[in-house]
Image (cartoon, rainbow, N blue to C red; front, side, top):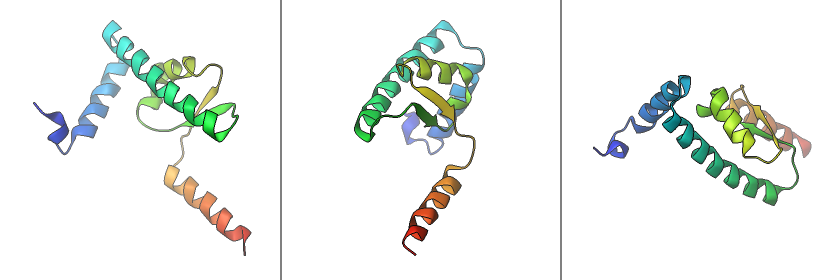
Length: 104
C-alpha cells in the first residue's frame, strides 16, 4: 500500500502518531527517540547559523505530546523548549506589520 499517494496521508500519520503517543510501547518510544534525535540535530545546525539562543519555540502536532517534547528537549543539549500555542500565521503577520511600520 502506497500511503503517500493518498491525499489524506499526513492526516492519517498525524492521527496514528497522536494515538501511539497516548500509551507508547517500547517500539513507539524507540521511534520517538530516533526521530527527535534527528530533528534536534537539524535544529542545532539552524541554531549554529542564526546565532546563540537559549530557547527553541516549537509548534504543531507531535509537540503537543509531553512525551515527544521531552524527548526532543533531551537531545537539544541544554536549550529550553517553549511550546507556541498561538496561531503562527497571526504572529508572523504582526511581526511583518511591525517591520513594515518601522520605515513609515
